[in-house]
Length: 632
Image (cartoon, rainbow, N blue to C red; front, side, top):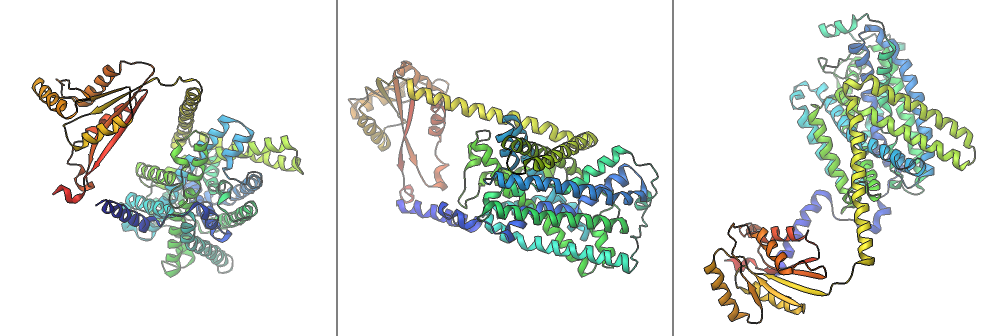
């Protein structure tokens, strides 16, 4: 009857295979590396997708926070130029990182190698928080694009977000190569639709005199009538909002090992392609928005996104081209979360190998992906989306702090490395890297200061808390390693072996357990049964002596009906707490099919769980497997 159990497990494996795919052998890892055309959407979709909301975030600050009216649009292009310059600086630094650290890990590895323990932990915590927020912001932005096209879906915003996160999590559990091939078409469709919107829009603005969007609603009129002067505080706040366009830049440096050989060269070329697409798109959209004057408020009274408003104006209404743009935006934003799914599990595995996260994060699943990291990321992002109602601008202040903290630490680490090694052209490289570190540090501080009350305080608290957690996990692993090393070298050998066989009643399982215990040739062998009354004890001992005359049975009465505690108490008493004893507790267990196992008392599990923490104690189960046919 045993083959039935084997078949049942095989059926379970088949269902798992249908869901996430059949297992992949470790030797096929190289065959699952990414070509550049697939790596671009996998690692660049996050950065490229930020063009869908970065301009919008700038306008929200100008129009509803600073209340400066139409003058807001005059500041779009200057901020866009500043962001593009910052983009060039950061990309130059990460390009050096790719060649210096081809095994991946990004800013965490750079900081660990050049700055030490705590800067690397700050960087690791910042980037992990950033990846969780990437999933939340990207999916929330994608759902916002669909709601702009179909306003009736607004009440289901959070449910849509959580559903899409679940789908992306499942896709990534199938493997990086498969998810990359799945996500490539929407990414390229968005790039083409965005290029078409910018080119057609600018052509119509400059050659067909396309005017600004007509805003007739009371909310729109109130936004346009603002007359307050723009202060430096709000200019910096708007710039820090626009700087979220740089999110995801570090993804390529974190995931270098996922590329086909030669990994560094392919990764560096992908990074440059991503930067060009991102910089041109963000600047082009800002120029177009300056002329079309779309509006957006932080309270969500204007439901259409800035991109949707511009597409409707450029294409002359909600026609085919408008819906293509919206669906492409939805696709890229939803799938931009894939960048985080590519890098969060990989980074968490690196940190886990350094003993700062639970070791489970370093384990690869059936599909050669870090399954535990993928599942954790999906759960964390879902909780975050639900907590903030799936609203993008509510999540943005949390987003930028971790991003620019990671940028700053990475570039500082590269600056130290260049100065130490003094390789070819190091002064020039160090100059630009140093300028980049100072710039991103200034942006990080600006984000914390100007957006502190908007939610930037949350990562400012979460990141130190994560570092505290990292060090706690590390202390545990160090303590365990130290204890095992000492135990291996100096712990004296056990001189006596004491075996206790637990007895519920005299049956076939107990017979097998006694035979096994006798085969161990222990110094002492005792059977132990916990009974409910003196009469039951006497009756059991009398029957036991007839069947097992050579084995003593202890049958104490449990007055308080607490079997587990009583077993531990009796084992302590029988053992006598001798330091040179090793105790083996033998537990006969009856194992039935999964559908009927719940009908049996699970007291053996509770006893084993408690004995696990008793020093010098071995717990052995003697399974008595009862086939299905024998249960009738």
